[in-house]
Image (cartoon, rainbow, N blue to C red; front, top):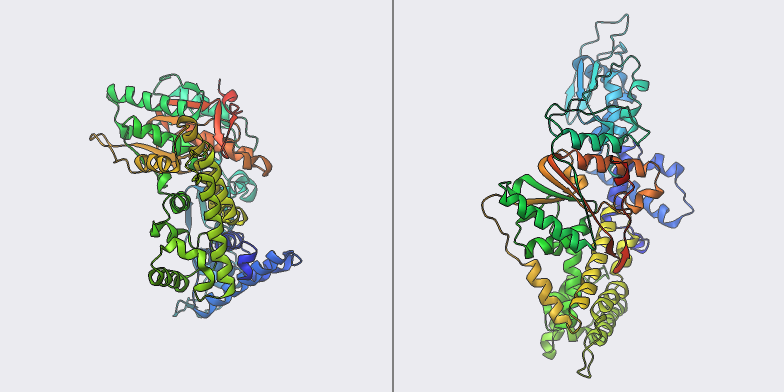
Length: 545
C-alpha cells in the first residue's frame, strides 16, 4: 500500500531493478548511494532488498542474475573464472552495440589472462559439485582468449534497455591492439538510399566514420511528401501502396514505420477505408490496446449504464482496492434490489463494505454521473460537439487513470498516455466531422473501425511498426512517416544526454531498412494531446542531400 501511494507499480519497480542489475548494482550497493531522504526512494530500496531476500529463500535467480551473478562469481573466485578462461579460447559477440554493462563485464572477465591460481577446489553449481584439475601452467600466465565483436555503433538504439554505446565506441581503448575491419559494402540498399543514410549519420560525433556503398547502382530517388494533416499523410501512403500493388509489388514487400505507437491510429483508419490489408508488427492494433479498451469501457458505462461488462472492467482501473469480493458484493446487491450493476454503485453505504471501499465506489459513481451530465444532457437537447472529447478527458482525469500512468516510471506507461491523448484527438476529430454526433454515434463509429475484418488478397499484408521494431528487418519499399520535430527526434530525447544522437541513429536504422524505394513523409499539422498544432519538419530531413 505504501508503494501504491508513491506510484510504484510492480512493472515499474521490476524495470528499475532490472536496469540496476544490468549495471551490476544490488540492493545493498544501491542503498549506499540512494537518496534516503526521499520517501519514494526509501520504499523502492526496501522493495529491492525484500525482492532479493525472496529470491535467496527460493534458491532462485531472475533473468538478469544469470549474467550478474556469474560476474560476481568470477571476481570473487579467480580459480573458477580460470576454468572458463581455459575452456573458451575464442569468443565472438554479435550485435555488440546492444550490450549492457553486465554483458560487457562478463566478456571482460572471460578474456582476462588465466591467472594460474592454484587449487583443485570443488565448487557448487546448481546442486552439482564440480572439481577441476590444478592448472598445469603454474608459471607464466596463459594469455587471454581472442575476442571478436561484430557491431555497428550507428545502430545502437537501445539505451532505454540499458545498452551502452561506449562498449563499442571505446572498444579500442578497452582492448589495446584491437584490429578494426570496416565492412562498408552493403548488399541490401541502392546507392541513393545509402548516400542519404551516410549524410544523416555523419552528423553524429560519437562514431567511427564509415561510408556505406553498393554495386547495385543508384536506384530510384527518395520520395518526400508533406501532407496538411496526419490523415493526408496516411492517405498518400495508402494511395502509393495501391499504385505499387497495381504495378506488381506485393503487400508483404512494403512496410510503414513511425516513431511512436500512437501514430498508427490515423494509418490504420485510412488503410481500413482504402481496403489495404495490414498487420501491426511487435505491437497491438490501436483499438485493441488495453488502455484504449479501458477508455472505451468508461465511455460505454456512461452511454449505456446497463452494460455490466463495461462497468466491471473499469471498477478497479486504475487500482482503487476494489477486488473480486467487493465486485461480488455489488453484483449481489444489484440482484437483490433488481437494479443494474451501475446503479448499485450509487448505494455504496448499503453494500456492506468498509469505509475506504465505500469512498472509492462513491468517487467512481460521481465521476460517471458528472460525465453523463456533460455528454447526455437530460433536457433532450443535443450536447455541444465538444462534449465527447470533454467527457472523455474528464473521465480519464477525474478517475485517476491518467495520473496513475503519469506517476509510473515504466516507459511503456508513457506510451499509454500518448495513446490516450491520441484517442482524445479521435473524439475531437469525430466532433469536427459530425457536429450533431452523439456519444452513441462515436462509439458506433469506433466499433466499425476497430472490428474491420483483416483483408488479404493472397499477397500478404503491409507491415506497420515502430522504428525500434524495424531493426534487423528489410523491405523493398519503406514509408518512414511523421518525420517531424518532437516525433523524430522525440521530444523526450532532447533533455537526455546523448538523446538526439540516439534518435539520429534510429532514423538511420529506418532509412537502411529499405532495399529499393524509400518514402519520407510528414504533416504540417498533427493532433497531439487532443489539440491540433503546427508540426515542424525534422532537423534530420535537412541533413539529406
